[in-house]
Image (cartoon, rainbow over all chains, first blue to last red; front, side, top):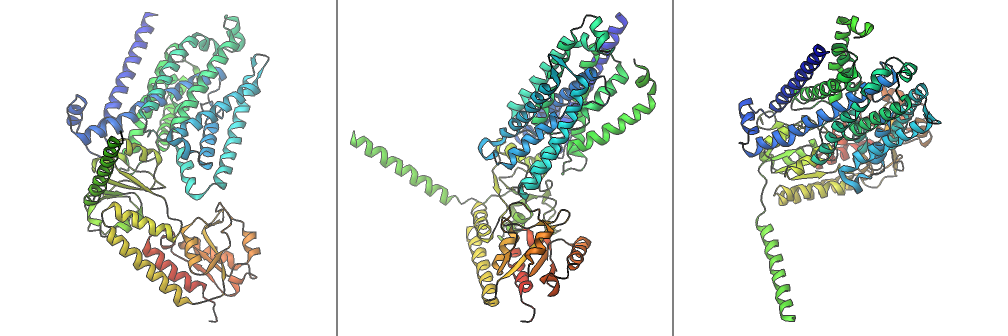
Length: 339
Length: 281
């Protein structure tokens, strides 16, 4: 047991070091060339106007938001794959992202942004995702019991319905508004408001904290509902709590940053491959790896073809997907045979 | 009491006057302008403000000898870092610019002015004047506008009175996408004496059936290259169409017809007037 603990501490330490290294790398690269030495000086407190602004008001917010959103999505992925015992489930499978996207598209179509300003986008997104969560829950909870297969199918259907509705909105919206919807759906970590970034970071850290109340239940659920029940887990309560937690994490992420694909699917798998299936360590390591991965992808997205920027989803898809396939072919034994 | 009030009002008026005078005398010309729209860049050149331009998008057409103008991204995705590092005192954005980027620049204390895409000639003239005021070249802007208006009037008077012609303007294929009433191209067609058959529709996706039923006199396709030609052939399959019988299907340069600048308006108008001419005239 002690050996295991040491190993876990090593992993967490390693991932934190990786996170810090990637964040520093991200801080020091960009189309406005600021040498690392100078960047370090600015970070220590000295520094002139423009470069200070670029580091603290343009690069830093994206890094923090990357950590918050990458962590939240990966955590949601771990939780959902755990309760559904299905490796293909990811935060967007249940249609929460579709609901958020529909909310934002309607918001653009109805020109509500003239009333609410920029804060209206995350607001419309959260309302959309919240409605989907309520709908999902209401349709699948019968007499206090969640039907997991039904829930999954309902979620997939809601996701299809909302993408058709988004297409409908796009077809009847004015040409000038179209690009707004398309670019929101593509996802971005650019967020002007520090307040919203701080709220998102708190939500995602609190989510990580709360998920630890369920770590034993998640471990028991690997064996199946019935076995978990025999082990003394209140299966229904745990599932409901975990589902709501994952949905809230996903809903908030999507409302703020749009649909950034792949993080919630790939990161839990990669973490499981290297660290094992034990949720006691899986939750925190997935969170850290997810944050690091998204920060790295965002850094690539804004530097590869600078001064132009790519949508971050392009990089998470290409980079994450190929990395995952590579890891899968190399580490077949881990996926098939468990830890 | 009344004396105090009078002094108060008097001083207020004085302050106001000073303010107005101050803002007038300081018709400051911004020295570092970043333009985020190709038409805005073009208009800056027309107003003679090109020397203050320090950044533009990759779609802006600037002379190749202007090496000091940095590219700051595309029309929709801009690179904030690049813009901030250029230390602009004026950023000209369009309605296509990412809203979050605009908000962020405002938060960072950058002077951002958004120019929505001009829908018609009046709006275009208004924007040129606004731009002129912003860059401290109001006189040039007024000259440009009156010159353009004269040219437009000349074209219209030369064309004389003609029976009205119905027009269908196609700006996209698959799905068939038409220029509706809020588009710049619609304004060109109306000035040229045409009636856009789509002007009632809000969205641009249009049914081919409806076009055939309305049977426009002229079809204008604003798509270049192979797509434009194959679209033209596709229309020519419908032998009953008036536009086919009179061979009045035209392919035009989308940059000229969709980029709202005074120069484009005049040349697009000239071309459209030619296209709307009745063949045996």
